[in-house]
Each structure stands twice: as C-alpha cells, then as structure tokens.
Image (tube, rainbow, N blue to C red; front, top):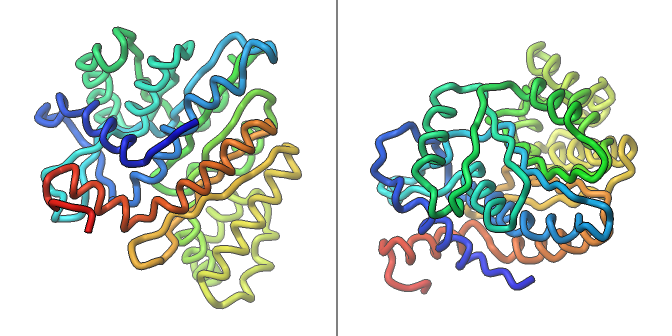
Length: 310
C-alpha cells in the first residue's frame, strides 16, 4: 500500500473545508495530534483487506468511543485559522469509501455529539451519501454494547483516544482485546501516566486511578525509577505485557513526540493478525519518518503560511 503523509494531510484538510465556517463546537488539538490521525487513515483501508471474506468476515465496523466533535483547531497561534478532521470524520469518510458496514460513534459530551451529527449531515459528498448517527454514551457502555453485538464474521477496528487515561479501566480494555476479530488503536498517554505515577505516593487520587488503569498494584514496582522518561517506558512495557498475556495478540507501539524530541504518548496497535502486524510495522516506519517537525512544516506549506518545505 502506497501512503504519503503529505497526501493524507491534504485530503483531510480538503474533506472538511466545507465545515470551516459552520460555527459549531470544535475540539482543540496540537500539531502532533495529526500523527495518530495519519495512522488511522493508513490502517482503516488495510484492516478491511486483512479481515476479508476469505477468512469468513462479512461485516466491518469502525468504532470510535471518544469521537469528539469531528473537527478540531490548534493551540499553536501560527495555525489559529486552521482546522483539521477529527477521528470521527476520518473514520467515517474512510468507512464510506471502503464500504464498511457501519460506524459506531460515541462520546460523553452532548455538545460534541450534536456538532458531529450536524457535520455528518453536511458531508454527504465526502461520505458517499451514507449517514451515521453518533450517540451520547460512555466508554463502559460502548464496550458492553460492542461485545453484546459482536458475532462470528464481524470485524471491528476500535480507536481508543480519550482526553485522559482515567476512563480506561483495565477490566474494560481486557475484555476488548481478548475478543477475536477486534483490532484496537489505543493512545497510551506515556508522559502523563509517568508524571502521575511519580506523584502517586502522596496523591491517592492518582494512585487509585492508576490501580484501575493497570488493573493491579504491580505497576508500583517501577516507581524506583526516578527519571520520568524511563518510568514512562517501563510502565508502557508493563502495560503491553499485560495485553499480550491477556489476549495473545501482537502489540506494536508508535511513539509520538512534541517538537524537539520530548515523547508525549505511544499509539498501541493491538492485532492478532500476522498480516495486520506486517502492515503496522510498515506504518511504524512511515510514522517514524513523519516527525512532528515535518508534519508542522507540511501543514504550514499546504495552508499557505510557509511557501516551501525548506
């Protein structure tokens, strides 16, 4: 599969150009937020091919339990007039283009849901005249609904990208990753988790939240590591090992860094498929080259803020 992050950015910007002045609620992101959306844009078409009728799959679903408003702007003042497609619209547009059965979109914020549904309604051309209905619903209810709905022949790609790690209880994530026919892209907030873990000895709220996130207290064995970058890496590896033990699936981490190198989070792609693993390993090489700096430069060129890439 030929993939260019420059082309992906251009298409995402073009697909939401008609929504720029709609006056509806927007989410807020940073330039590095684009990287997780590039990965989603890359994997959605591949997932449909991997889970083919040859392997008895007959239905394909994109699931976004933290769908947001479908459109976000940037905290960067140099991009104050720019917007970008959120995961819900990138997912829905890809799902329509590649003939997915349906999209399951949900969020706990009613204003986000109202804005997204209106944007979906205004995007008939981009969605090939298909329509989807986002629902106001929490993560636990979405997990329960997905697992209740799941049946033989059904493949689901679930994009788990919460505003914070607190809603992601281990008992919920474990149930998702164990299920056959479900691949997950999960935003593991490496820096924030390490920061809160290092403060957990005196902050019992952080301690409680992390106990629920990891599903045990064994994560505390890594607190002897004083350096937050090393602590983040150790907690990441511990979480990956829990997923692998619980599910038998492969977990491929893709790091996302702030400009000038500071790691913010890791995108964990969780798949049982050997073909899926190969696709993600290729994606990782592409994403490693698509640094935050190069994405920022490309975005400025496409938006006319900067004349050339150099």
